[in-house]
Amino acid sequence: MRPRIAIPADTLTEATNVINERNAPFAPRPAIEAIVKSGGAPVILPSVDPKFVDDYIDLFDGIVFAGGFDVDPTFFGEEPHLKLGMTYRKRDIFEIALLKRSVEKGKAILGICRGMQLINVGLGGTLYQDLSENKDIYVKHSQDAPGNFPSHHANVLTDSRLYELVGKRPYINSRHHQALKDIAPSLRVVAKADDGVAEAIESLENDQILGLQWHPENTYKHYQDSQNIFADLIKRAAKVAEKNNKNN
Image 1: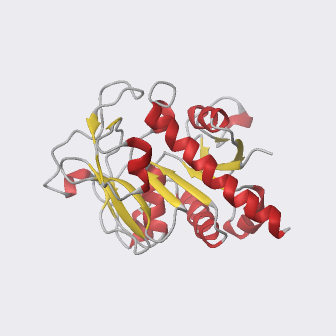
Image 2: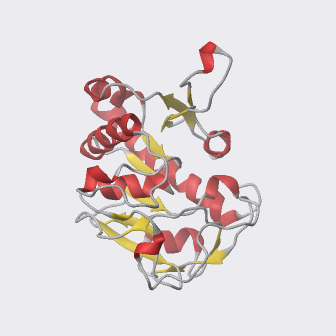
Image 3: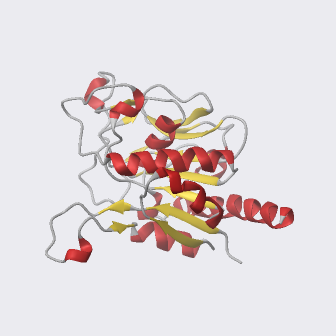
């Protein structure tokens, strides 16, 4: 059986004349396709009351926290910055609860863009609500190039798991205006842009969490290092599935 990979859904907030599409949950097609190509079975989870998280937790072996709206800054003790983008608190509440339970249950975790930021916040870190808060930043992190093209480089620590997947200086795409600030105690930064912006995080003590500020789901068809990210998730999730099967 293929490892089951959960993708918490985003919410369609745009106006629509179709009543069944109002506030409809959806998941990014490129992430779904990347998971399938890598050997996983995607499972889409709509945002619901966090009290139902335990009803979901045994449905998957790994989970991808994908991109989307800004994380509500009240989750890390701040009021909204003037340049804060759109937020969707219902999704934040559900995903933070799901993240914490997934950590407790040993699920394989991948964060992409907002997903990496949510992981950091959910585990006790903070964010720059807008890159303008850090005067040292000079790299263009919200590219004007098409989203499936790389736009700047990242510098990866050679003692990281990420280094084995993408090498020392991957060429990455970039579509974000927020960034990690204070890093959660259980995480470490393993890649930075030339201006010091955190581009990737990993768990300190195991291989459970990998978070990326870029979007490998948009480049996996043409770049092997992007495909390696999803192959690694499936490999980690397969270990979770095997362990659970032995226990059952």
